Image (cartoon, rainbow, N blue to C red):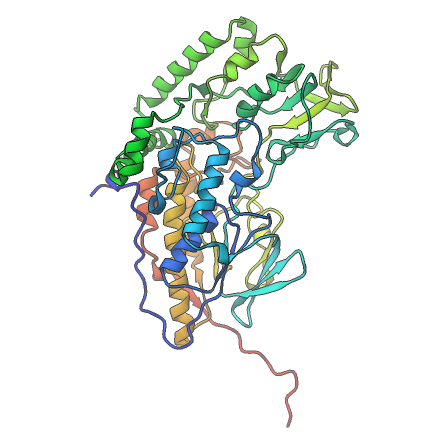
Length: 523
């Protein structure tokens, strides 16, 4: 069977080592309780690993779908593909689900799978340190508490830390200023002069809602995105009833959407250079721009200068229409500084502002930001990643035995649902956990560390393939300042599922615990 025909709703099947004997218990700490953390918890428990705790810094599960409550927040992946394959949701009401529905789904999965008892909320992790002598990890919380672990799994994702540009004078701004992921619902925007910085996926959703309330809206645009119509709407009642009753029909819908997104992924990564999809998408974008923007000067501002797909393709039916309104302005001049009641541009113009909203996305390339991770011989992970993050299969890093990453380096997608990557990652982590459990129970070693040469070969392949992808052609949140693409996967989801389906023990070396030296030797 070719990789492109792998069923999208069938997660990878772990190839497990023999069951551990003896004590064999494995302590697993998962950091984060969003989609990634919950998927990992399900895979671990299904594999028979029971000593698992999910540490969540907030007061509920949900990750980005708990944090991003800005008006208009919704997914840009069809609902049929934005749920776990093992828990397809018969209750989606829209073709593209909104934030409250996705959060409700995650809460429902948590309850149905009895995961709530594994989750500790209000537990912000500040550090994880590997102990060479014991071959275990110590996880430190902001409260001062520490937890021991044999396996630590980071499930904090790439979109958990808001990115706010350091503009001169920003601290002097007198009005409310907030990031879209920390929306101030107590701020009344009615009749106010609002300045929005950024034109990314969040901004194109909340700006139309803000524009319906505010007196004026000024959008500061660094580069124009491609925005195409969103084929959204409520499921017709008869179809929704059929989807509720038929799991097979839900599978067929999911599979059809998956195959379409796979073709788009292939076009972006360069594996199908002659694909017609980019041409069709560009034509649809141009049609919508001409149809919704009457002002030719404004229309010229909204024409992207980057190749299609270099930045994430955005979906909206009212973004261009909103920008064409007389009380909304798009500014492409850079910012010089911020004053108490205005944003001052590089050309000296003052933009009056009562409210400042950052639609500037997330620090996606700053993996594990705010978390101090120390591996073998006291080496800091952030030092290892000084020139850009890398991990074998996006999951493990040499020198950090017993550490796994969900949604790690080079596992993001330019199109399609990230859940297609998270489920095979969770299955791989479960296989790693079983291997560790067997290893420790046998007394041979304390942990497993991915071999440096294996990780180096894999990273060389990733960077070589990414160099010929569309993402190498522009500045975006996919790339570091040096130009290294650290976020995206350079292929189709099916390939990643195939490559992570089996935990290859030969890719790892056994790490023995160093015997503790007695404090005093009597003679």
